[in-house]
Amino acid sequence: MTIRHCKLIGVPVQDGAGRLGCEMGPSALRTAGLGSAIVSLGHRVTDLGTVSPRAPMTAEFPNPALKKLPEVAAWIRELTEIAFEVSADGMPIFMGGDHSLSAGTVSGLARRAVAQGRPLFALWLDAHPDFHNLGTTLSGNIHGTPMAYVTGQKGFEGGFPPLATALDPHNVAMLGIRSVDDAERRALPDSGITIFDMRAIDEYSIAPLLRRFLDRVHADNGLLHVSLDVDFLDPAIAPAVGTTVPGGVTFREAHLVMEMLHDSGLVSSLDIVELNPFLDERGRTATLLVDLVASLLGRRVLDRPTWSF
Image 1 (tube, one colour):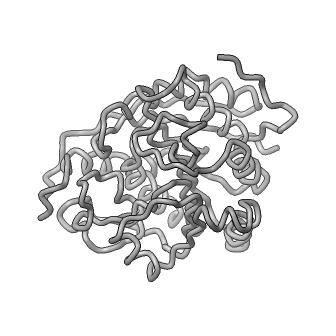
Image 2: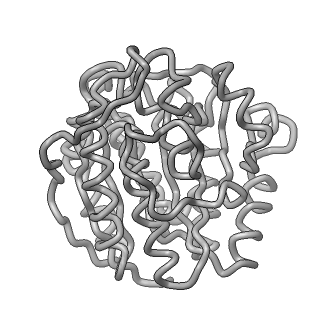
């Protein structure tokens, strides 16, 4: 097994979400033992602490529904630089925080991929595609926009920081999708993004769909970023998220994804987003997320720990 240098970065952003609580996500993951779980697998861990954004940016966009645009824009600016820097050596693990953080992490990682002369791929594990631009979102919750932004779609001018390096949408696969707004439904077919929704998982099972994507990453010698949203999981096993959608991925399906990602050896960075401990039940969602990261980093089925609550 390849020994990784995992860098933990807390990103307590909740400005992009529709309800409070995501800012506690990094603390919950630390309390649930994320660092020690990774160390127990033989990897090196450096906790780089918790990010604080600089002052809000001057950001304007003609959509009155938008919430806290200057604050989110400042987070994106900060995280773009941090992601670029920390990915120079080691595997950054960004502990969120709502999914707006990925607008910064992925854009910074795309810059790093260019610097290394390799393509960046992204696996989006989520119930939602997050493919709104700043003009199409009706809720005004900016955590529904990061994938559109990082793939260079229009509709962010003057609102988000200018994008230095766009992620090729043909290098994106979304897995577990089951809640798509009308504007996203119109935009996605021509985007080039690969979407494996829950019907595809039901019909074909999760392994062959993921394997198809991983084979592409391997063939292109790509770097692979994984963005794990809590609502990828069925709310019966992961209730600590403000955007629950029934019919999500099961416990074993989620672990299989992580085990396959480990076996591939391709993952170079990770987001863990939308954990809202205020909505959790005795830490069960945070504990599950730690267990999933352990599978991603080499824990075998035979070594699965016994849970007690």
